[in-house]
Every structure is written in structure tokens, then in C-alpha cells.
Amino acid sequence: MLRFAVRRTIATAITLVIISAVTFFLFFALPSDPALLACGKVCPPELLALVRRNLGLDQPVMAQFVAWLTGIFAGRDYPGLGYCPAPCLGYSFVNRAPVFETIMDRLPVTLSLTIGAAVIFLTFGVATGILAALRQGRPLDKVASVASLVGASVQIYFVGTLALYFLVYQGKLLPSPSYVPLTENPLGWATGLLLPWVVLAIIFTANYTRMTRSTMVENLSEDYVRTARAKGMPARTVILRFALRGTLIPIVTIFGVDLGTLIGGAIITETTFGLQGIGRLSVRAVTYSDLPTLMATVLVAAGAIVVMNAVVDALYAVIDPRVRLT
Image 1 (spheres, rainbow, N blue to C red):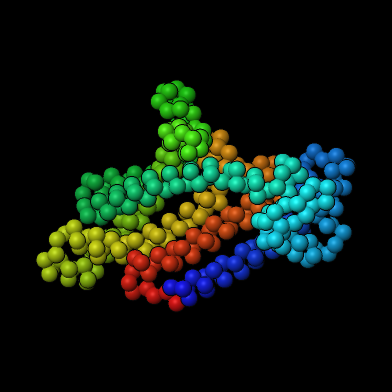
Image 2: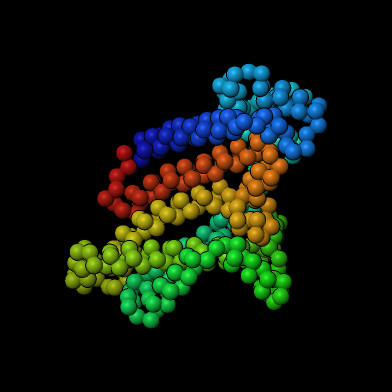
């Protein structure tokens, strides 16, 4: 296990460095002036000169990248602006603040949205898929299949807009989506994010229901499951101990990818419900040409996906004893 953890940590670090390099050179290779992109659309000449000096545009591009990458691990000094402590993801001349501070302010919103929705769609998706597989060909199976097909076909902005109109503005059944820190008001935190959770769950539950059902049906016909039944084991034990464990492998795989993607920023969801998370921050960075913030959000999104993939690989050995971590 320790050997696997070390290998995956090194691989993750190398992957993030490569992603950082690609992101950096992609934006700095644009025909536009990097200083103008970093300074934003409204940039007076004196601020533009300060941006050029801080970005080191008078130096080779490789030296600029090394300085930016070094700042992530050791911090960086911005002349005229002060010292940016590690992890320094750059300085936003649009927000007039270090990018890392802005991301940390927005991250709780995205994490709350992601974790709450994930609990709902994973629980309901897997449970519905198991029930549909155990009642294959019966009314429950058909209803679940149709519902999952419809859920997978709709889009978040469509369902979200309808939910806002009927449940918030017209029906007054739910409060307008908002974020309140969990430590300040747990009830306000849950009620403010309930509608975004439900809308995200509608979309994602469909995929987990279909995946769970198809994999469970396949596993129920495997030899080891039939052998367990032939030995007289209780149906609950056969389903939970044998069939379900094999079913969880693909579920964990797609869950890791989905979770990493949502942590990187649920752009459409946050925009639809007006939540100020990482996704909304990336949209604002594009709108105002805030290059440092945009690069940082890309790096955070990529890092979340890479880390979740490593976690998923480790969980394989817990779920399936045939998998060995080397």
C-alpha cells in the first residue's frame, strides 16, 4: 500500500506539472498580449506597466513559467504589490487579490454543492439500479429504465430554470438558492442548497441507475453468485456480499470522475442558481480576461480529477480482493 501511495503521489505531481505547463504555454502562446489578458478589460496604463513587470514579460517564456511554478511551492514576490505566500497561484489584477485567496473563498460553495448532490445521486442511483435489476422485466424495472432515460436526456439549465420558476418564484415552496456557511447555520446551509442538489441529482441519478442495473444483472448470472445461492446463503447476503461488490467497480470509477469534475467547478449549475463557486469564478475570469484566475481554476479542476482518479484506484483493492496495489 505504501509503495502504491508513493508511486501515485509522484505520478500525480508529474501530471499536475505537465498540466501546469500546458496551461501556461497555451495562454501565453495566444496572439494577444499576456499583460492585457492578465490586467483585464479595464486596465489603466500605469497598472499595465506594473503587470508587465510582475509577469516578467521581459524574460524568456521558460523563465516566466519557472517563476510561476516556483511560486506555487515557495511563494513569490510581486514588486509594488507585496509577497504572495505559497501556494501562490498568481495575482489577480482584476480582483486586486492573490488568486489562491479568491479560490479558497469560493471553494466551500463548490464543495458543499458537490458533496450534497453526490450523496443524493449516489444513494438513489445505486439503490434504484439494484431494485430494478432484482425485478428485471417487471413494472418497477420498466419505470426506472424510462425515468433514467428521461433524466439522462435533460440538461441542468433546463431543469434548473423550471425548478426555479415553479418551486421558488411561483410556488414559494423553497427559498431562493444561496450559500450559508455550514458552521454558521446548518439549516440555512441545507435549505439554501437543496434545490441545486435535487437538480444535479436528477441528472446524475439517471446514469448511476442505468450503470448499476446493467452491471448487477450481469453479476447475478455469474457462476460465483449461482454457487452462493446453491449453498443456501440468504438472498440478502448473496446480493450485498457477492453481486453488489462486483457492481461497485464501474460505479466507483464514474463516481470518481464525476466528483472530480464537480469539484473542479459545476459551471452550468452555479451559473443557473447564482452560486459563487469555482465554476462561476472561471466564467467571470473568462468574461473579464482575468488570466491568472483562469489558469488557476484550470489547474484546480485538473488537480481534482487527477486526485480522485488516484483515490478510485486505491478503492479498487478494498472493493475487489482480486485487485492488488503495486
